[in-house]
Amino acid sequence: MPGTGILNLYREFLPVTESTPLITLGEGATPLVRSAQLSKLVECEDLFFKLEGSNPTGSFKDRGMVVAFAKAIEEHSTGAICASTGNTSASAAAYGARFNLPVIVVVPSGGISSSKLAQVRAHQAKIISVRGNFDEALSMVQRIAKEQSITIVNSVNQYRLEGQKTGAFEIIDQLGFSPDYIALPVGNAGNILSYWMGFSEYMHRGLVKSLPKMMGFQAEGASPIVENRPVENPVTIASAIRIGNPVNWEGALTSVKESKGVIEAVTDAEIVDACSKMASLEGIFCELASAASVAGILKLYKAGWNFQGKRVVCIITGSGLKQPDMTEHMRLSNIVEIPATFEALQSAIFESRSE
Ligand code: F0G
Image (cartoon, rainbow, N blue to C red; front, side):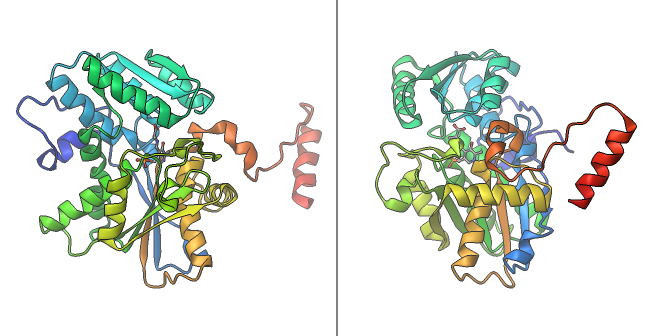
């Protein structure tokens, strides 16, 4: 039954006890859409997009947040805190508002998009803007959470990872088999680990016969795992993954190693190009960070990878509506302004057609 949420749907796979409230904002059950054009471009048997922007707050974070909040409520927590590049804070703020837990979000000043900030403020979370980057914000938040016993809802919280692994379950439930490759953007590196946990668990329980290779993509100016060293001042247009020292670094490496996958970097130009292609060729408007997964597949294809006979799923982690201010970097159609007359409309249509 759609709308029942992941705690209900996947409770046997989640840390649900008799006293865990099965709360939901309707997260999960997101569409898995077959590619119309890009699959041909990369000569792939089948390419799918898992549209995680269809979650209640517009990103994949809701899968993890609902479990983190359910456990926080079960444990009689008095509040939640997170550092965020935007989506985690939007999700935490929403679940806090709905389930009566005060939320504090700490964000890098100028480092999160206006629409994510609007979400947090609309949900009335306390918002603190730090003149620093995400990594600095997170290390302070970790310390506060420890000293003040406030529940931290970043992906250092194991329940977040548990919830996000349901994305992997859904892909198998929707396809009926495991794809060959999963491509996803990597920031703080929780999601790649969650997906690997999910696939491995289904395999372990005999619910699927094979495992996908995990392909993680970082933005070139914020690619500590690829470079094998923390990046002190990460830079990328994709603010959601502007992270220089991911907390789940080891977990990401394990996922890639165990699955015989890859972790690679894509440039900002490749991300913007992939985002434009998603919008103009597939009808899918996604966040720049989300487009890193698609950019990665395009890059590997150009580098000589053969996807013939392969089935690939790109995790589209967030909606493009999350980052409207970034569309200026993409290829956009022109706006023709006219006076309010029928003749002007007629000639505008005729002229734009003949262009
Ligand atoms: N895609 C989007 C849209 C994100 O918001 C994030 C992370 C990622 C990908 C990367 O996922 O961190 O699990 O590797 N956003 C976090 C935030 C950091 O604060 O919203 P990850």
